[in-house]
Length: 384
Ligand code: P1T
Image (cartoon, rainbow, N blue to C red; front, side):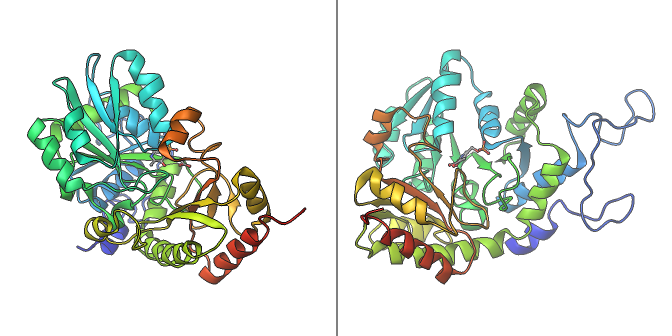
């Protein structure tokens, strides 16, 4: 079955007890047992819940992986992956990534002896060089948050396989509609389902997809043992969202291309970061590795913080806020929002300047979105 069909049917068979076409919200903490140790596959909703299981199967199917696991947030999913390791282990991490993921590596797991080595994302050889005898995993996002850099997953997977380490890819920005890391050789895919998968900015969730059964069992153990599971309602909303993932992603991509082209020629914009632009350094790779370029655009304005302030004040359709991947357009200021947890020097060194903005292009009418941006850009440099 093709992607669009799997999105609507995978893991979503009619309910066995009633025939309900839509997976029910199994809003229950526990399940009655017929006798000691005799049950219908579910015992307690932290260890397993039918609505969650439907979501887990659906996400696994979209990633063309064997096993899926759902979590209470993207960071909970990332933490579950990190629980696979122990003190003394090293993880090589691409240096452009979500600020919260950076914080989890740097401020939480590091103190337990799992050390991250951050490497220059632009350099495949740097990843190879950074792998030490105690390295257990390479962790990347591609495209990255927020600089929208890409890395060749297939080439990196060759390096990690040869070195005998795992490759984990946070696929949140591309979504499985545009990119399937497991098919390119990755071992673990992680999602913040909060974003494109659920797609409506109405829940926080995460997911992991793997092909290796032993690893799945280990991750499932940590899912239950640490307990960061999503509730049935959030799972239901995520399922409802992912059924339209293909339709939404096509629109995000369509609007993204349109607005990136507009911004790229605007005199008040210093720089546009969008893999769909021919001047993006990894445009060729984006065409090879991804099925589309998506709806994430980052820009640098001319005129510093003052310009940013004037610009965001004039926006009417774009909402100023943290997050991405919803049907509505959002404007994020990474320095104070998504990457507020990255130290200032570190952030500036990576190119996330004080005039840097990240745009999550929604699926509203593209002309309306363009007009909104154009009006707000016009306000830059005007006396109040
Ligand atoms: O917010 P949560 O569901 O826990 O997901 C964390 C996360 C993981 N990976 C990527 C690539 C992400 O972008 C995020 C969350 N990002 C934001 C909230 C943001 O505004 O960038």
